[in-house]
Image 1 (tube, rainbow over the protein chains, first blue to last red):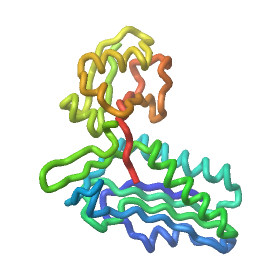
Image 2 (image 1 turned 180 degrees about the vertical axis):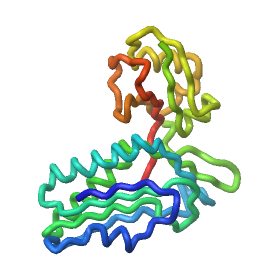
Image 3 (image 1 turned 45 degrees about the horizontal axis):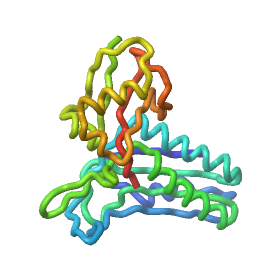
Length: 139
Length: 80
C-alpha cells in the first residue's frame, strides 16, 4: 500500500508512522528531513518550498512504485512532503516503509528519499539575513 | 497552435510570471521550444539544468508538443 501526500500544514509524524504499520512487518524505517539553520556556512532564517503539485504527486507515486518493484517484500510505503513556508526545525519530508526484515527497510527508505531529491518537482528557496537563493539552481 | 507553459521556482522568477503562452508550429519539439525560451530569457541558460515536462512526465528533447498538452518548465529540483 502506498500513501503519498503534499501538504501545506505541519506533517504529523506519528500519524504518518501509523500508515505503515503492518502485521507482516518486522521493521519500520523512517527518514525525516528537517530544516537546518545553516547552508554552506550561512545562517538560514526560513525556507519556502514551491511545488508543481500534480507532477510532484505523480512522480512521488512512481518512486514508491519503483521501490516496490525493487523490493517486492515492501509492505507499506508513505511519503509526505510539506510545502509553503518552513522554519528551522520543521519537518519538510517524511519517508516511512515497512518490511518483514530490517535490511530491505533501510535500502528502500534510502532509495526513496535519494530518488525524490532527483526527480520530484519541488523547489526550495533559502532565506538569509541578507538575501535568498533557490537551492541547486546554478552550478 | 498555442502552447501554455507553467513556470516554477527560479524559472518563474526569471520570466516574471507563472504561465507563458507562446504560438508555435504544430508538433514543435521540446528542444525547439527550450531553445526559443532560452533565447528570449538568457538567464535560463545559466541554470544547472532545465527540463520540460509534458502531462506530468519528463519529456525527451525530440518529443513533439501539442496544443492540449500540459507543459511545464522544470528548473533544477531541490525537494527533500
